[in-house]
Image 1 (cartoon, rainbow, N blue to C red):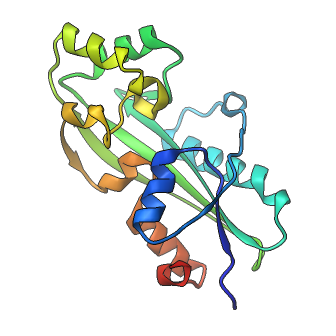
Image 2: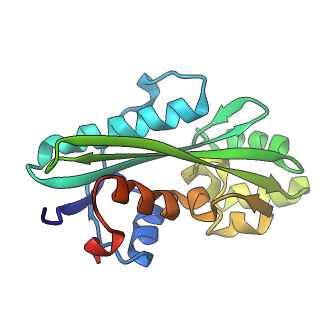
Length: 196
């Protein structure tokens, strides 16, 4: 079995960068899938369905490829948070999150067109947020960074300053779990080194 092209069905710069750090140079094809059409209250189920739909949206553009879709949400006190709609929503979220913890879920979906196989899994990481003043929250929201990220923070950016600790996979919080990526590729019959 030859090694197919690795396609990332995401516009996420963070996800692409994680793959590049791991030695994988993906073709990037953002899915532009409308996430609002999926309404699921279970965060693990939600991210898996969204990741799969993103991969499925991109798949018809290829005859032979390995397509990866991902989606992340933050669950805090049973409430699911994707990207905030605006600065005010980001500010309100941070007022609730600061001093507490949340669970960051990332769905990972692979569609292997060469084998006609689909594999979908998720990873969860517990994130502990620092106590922040209103001034700090306002200053962080004003950078615009929280508006681009699930949970209104970027671990690899300024938001990393406001995370006290993580329990679980750190790369999962950035956009995809590298250990889960390795495991899923193995489940499909590949070694991660095949894509170097």
